[in-house]
Length: 207
Image (cartoon, rainbow, N blue to C red; front, side, top):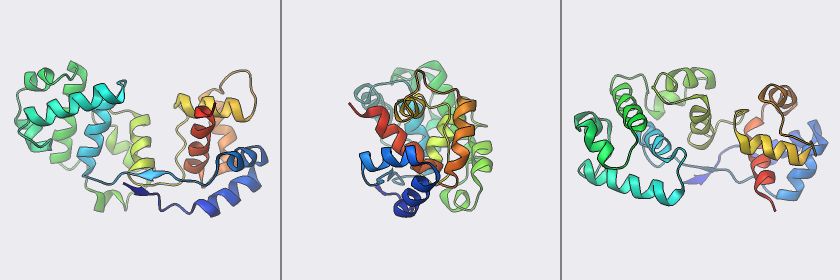
């Protein structure tokens, strides 16, 4: 893992100028420090995200360890495709997650999910289109991959509850905004909506 290559200082200056209310929250929460995870292939990073959906860190780590052991020590497209689906279920995956993992493996092998060299040249929307062809991988998962594995600076995950909750706190609203309202407000944050989202997560987590 490494610090994001996004120019945080330039982003903070631009966001503060475009949106002084957000600027106050930025000053309150300190320097931008999004951590990028490039420790693997797109398949392994997406598989990790699939396993961890709707689970605590402890439960997810246990299932991941069981899964890797069941696959002979390596979770790769080849080992997943070769495995009996019941083997995946026996490691603790739900039926839906096992199906998603197998589809992810198949689409990694056929090139639907390309490697980082190709992904780095693709536009955000094109990547989302490719990733969401995997059964069980939605827009939110694709956006998290864009932010935390590809360090794309202008992703706006309007379906993320933490981002919406952070917006509610920063702008002192009675309720979190609708995704549509958040998307409209976020136009002023371009081209640094990922950075704005990171600060909204910090606001949501603050005591």
